[in-house]
Image (cartoon, rainbow, N blue to C red):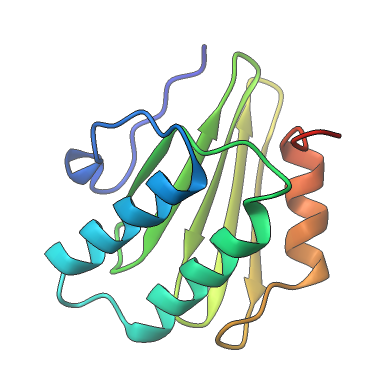
Length: 129
């Protein structure tokens, strides 16, 4: 398995997420513990969770990013996929032994763009699909 340590991993919540409700609860805990998370960052994270919850598996990790943002991370034996949610963009990271992909997608508060869907479709297995 690929192993990556970035940002403030010390603040990773040591949980296994059984559902997207667990993920949303973890996000609320992170925001409550970190007062400098922007309201737009929190709202964008909530919108992203609603968007992905019926399409993709729950992430392996939810944590704070280097900047005051929220990271959702998925990993497999072949690759790692992360989305850092900010107040004005999603940063999409995909790491594998073969290559790395980093894509920034500008976002208006509360919006999930087709570009984000395409990136996730390419990186994650769709639930039930």
